Image 1 (cartoon, helix red, strand yellow):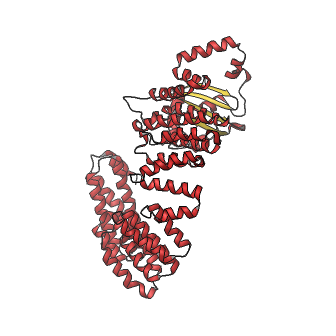
Image 2 (cartoon, rainbow, N blue to C red; image 1 turned 90 degrees about the horizontal axis):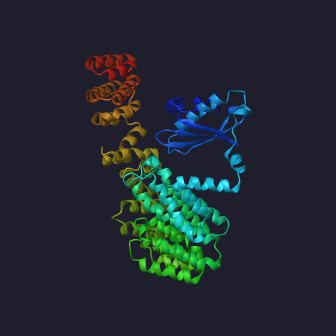
Image 3 (cartoon, rainbow, N blue to C red; image 1 turned 180 degrees about the vertical axis):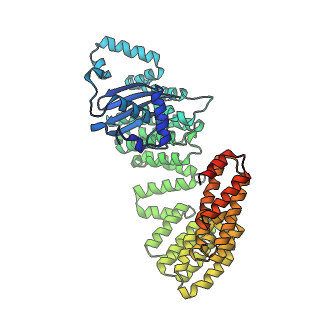
Length: 538
């Protein structure tokens, strides 16, 4: 993609909006900075676009800090592409006289006092800039409060009536991003404890933020993930002399009430502490907490944590004994079944599956898991009869994949009565669409036609499987659907849907019949100009 042909690669509506922005003078600055072009674009909000250009106007990297994420390029980037094409004529470099000195070059020529006065002047105007400077350069004892101020300031700047809209979420986390970058830089320079304190501050503020913002794009969640990942890396890199201090800091944070309702995140932090438990005092603290929580709502997660501690520090034999005593834990049962299956202890594995089905009878999803594991064991032991019974049960529950497995278990000469029995039991409840899928895959046109007559809205999906034998019946059903839809249609999108049905009708029954129905509809609804317009496109 380059400046001469970028229109071929960008959606029309984005191009139109970008061209409008360009022509309206929304690009208030466009300057070359090293190998990049940087533009400031004004609109409902102000955004920065960066573009890297290669030889002949080839567009390399291009980024915009707006929240648009529905495609590769936004309207702000399109506007800048138009501006760059206008400024950089094909085959000509920008005249030397038009080039401006970059900021680095300008500031580099100033003396220390002038630079200091500029920094103070701009930091007085911009509270967030001042806070970020304090974060980067203040004494260590002030850094943590400065970090919190940076995060809160960015959030406050886009909060409206106590809430942050989707379009503002990226700007809301700008302070957190700065603090994370600072923490990551400190990690690189070996200041692990301070870095972890910064990661924890980000977690505290982001867990608070996520409750009053639209985070559908996962931006705040991404900050949380990045902070936890930073803590994990810090723990892996920590020396033994810092182990207890680091453990206490992260452990105390993980127990914070903010994580009530966020069990998964709390457990990520607790699991991250594992390497520090090589220090006995740390392991003792964690195991005391696990023992206190083992009968609570997070008991399964706590048992998994204890299992990992035992496996990591005491060996597989001790861990296996711990697991076998707690098979009520679904994760442990799953692992025990897999271990028994790998060891070819099939009777033991089957017993564990059946026991799990009884234990979790009130939880259909879990029962399904144990039954699927049981089916896998029957496959390994080549127990075809047991496979048939279970595959049929799965098919009756609406699982088409197991219908296919069931069919493969029978020779062709024995399949027909099995199929008919299955269809009779399924009836027409069509759970998850399995009944009609079977009719289609087995080529049962009479039953499929009966199904469509009783469910006429389905004829558009299945008419191709009914032709040519049922051409007339299909046409009648589709016509009825079109007339019914036309009665209630009142928007252009509805009218387009009806025209889509007419195209289906044309494929099924021929163009002449479609045109006759189109003319009928145009005569019935002369006062719906949008409908007439769409019908006229056929």
